[in-house]
Amino acid sequence: MTATAQRRRRWRLVLPMLPVLALIVVSVTAHLVEEPSASDPAYLSPTGDGPDGAAGLAARLRARGVTIRYVTGSDEALTAARAAGGDATLFVPTPQFPYRDQLRRLYLLPDRTRVVLVEPDDDQVRQATDALGATERRWATRVAARGAGCRLTDAGPAAVVRTRYGLLEYADVPLESCYDGGLVRVVEDGVEFVLVGSADPFRAERAAEHGNAELALDLLSARSTVIWLDLHERETPPPRPRIDIPERTARPSHSPAAAPADGPSPFPDWLFWVVVTLLVATLAIVLARGRRLGPPVPEALPVDVPGAETAAGRGRLYRRVRARGPALETLRAAARRRLAAALGLPPTAGPETLLPALQARTGDDPHRLGAILYGPPPQTDEQLHTGAVELRQLVECVTARPVDEGEHR
Image (cartoon, rainbow, N blue to C red; front, side, top):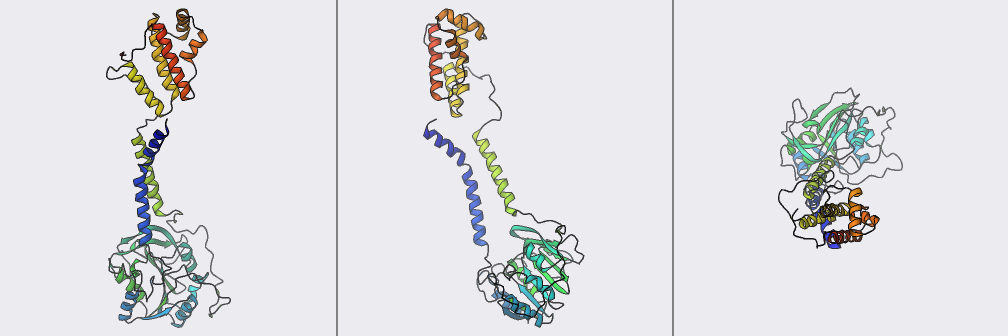
């Protein structure tokens, strides 16, 4: 096979994959572009005017008579929440950024304090509560209906289902679940924890869609004050405690058996569709290549074809897959039939009959004749060429005429 033919063959294998790969790259790139960054200073900030900001939400809350207390540190947020005496909502848009163990101290806030966490992952949920865990995370946010029995809001369908939450297996506290698990509420130690499965209801760019704006207002206007933690990078723990809140010591440990009822998968949701797409692409390549499964089988030709044309056609197919042995065997079978006919033997004559007759006719060494007609398969293209030439010469010698390229068979 020439280098040019090899390149063409490789391109035939690669080309069907290119549209699939292009689709995956475009999808992932579009998702990354559309995905907001929590490290952006405007992200869900009460002063952020961009598409991912929440300045408009803050203005609507003030119009409802809600006081907004703007803080930039988790210690300051906890101190302010304690000072409010339970008449406050602690809004944490980025629960991944408070320094370690801060979420574990939320249970010490005054009774009736509402804590709203935006899309916390399973580890952050379990730090904040003993009863909840994340059950599923989608690649993109889904719109869902509020659901019957939801008292958290009167909003209509909202884009809130990206991360879903549920009770741990052994939790024994009441759970209020809305929007197909994308919004849940549980009360522990007198503190009301509200988990929101997507940031879309709070983002300016998504506020006008569905019931997003109404949902965000309902969640943050239940108390007279909102303590808004505007944090966009991981906090550095202070050298010593700066607020007068005792460490939690009696918090029960999470048993490994106490997993969410729908156990979260360790793989992202989009992985399944990528694998399915690749499998479909592989099947398409197999069909495009036209390779049948199993060894070649003989089939009768539907029309009368010249023997040389048949051999040449088979030879090209065998050469394409480097099947030198089957290629030479095809020529050997045709040569044995010709030789048997020229010697007056049946077409199916075996080596024990054909070789002695050939020796008598040509006077050649029977071992050489056997190697030409029944030898081992060639390992290189040169051996294949040599074997084909020897077969042609032997047939011409026995039949006393050149091989007729146009003879039908």
